[in-house]
Length: 132
Figure 1 (cartoon, rainbow, N blue to C red):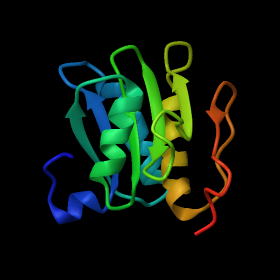
Figure 2: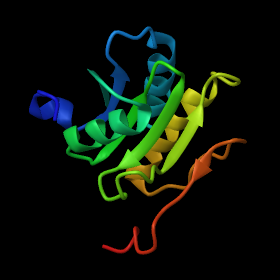
Figure 3: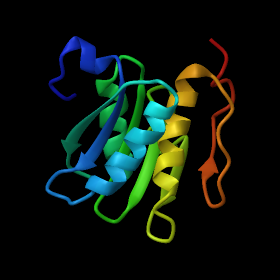
């Protein structure tokens, strides 16, 4: 888990690949989160987008994380999801604007609101995910 203060953990954590130039994509994800009036925090890590998203979700008190790797893959996950089953995963190579949608959907996941739809975004939840 990342070394964050209490206020930072009460946000949607975005984890970018260490040493990568994903600044524009990170900013797009943050804007999507903020459009839903939710706070976000950016950390760095090592691995693919799924590993980075898992690190982010485990670092957040909200249990929601977004991972962005150097190949332009963005993954949204929740700490209750099975390790290799993201909520959403999409490449930004052909459509950089999708990063903002992932940010919006990360905030909506916390709020329990319907996701914004976008072509090429795959969404999946295991059976019983929404049952508390």
